[in-house]
Length: 167
Image (cartoon, rainbow, N blue to C red; front, top):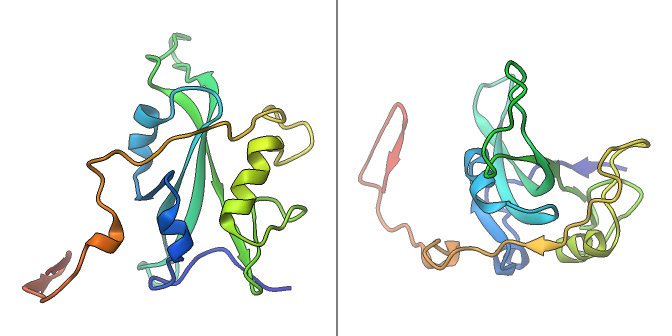
């Protein structure tokens, strides 16, 4: 069976956009400020660079979840501040028939069904995984100031250059 790890740029499912805990393109650096307690989670999009072409051409749906462990400075042994919790970033997979999963043993009909499954069942990537009792218990909703992608309309390209386009 063939699977898709990434989504085509135009293939952002409307169902995904309607999820209150979907944050769109959110950099990893923002996660510690949003995911504060064990089980806090959100769904976000990530672009992956194609190593052959050097261009970003694949989008992945990522579930980011707080493990509840604090990051420790390896040099000093001191803990960082409380906003620096360990976060796991899990890639969602989608099959040709539209099923979604984190781990191949639990395939669901929709991304929401998959998330709901791991709200009641623990995440366990491998045997002996230290987070075997970790669940997606605290959905972190979009902030009121975050733009909804269906409210953005590109009308006219103003210009372009080496590093991007201006519309």
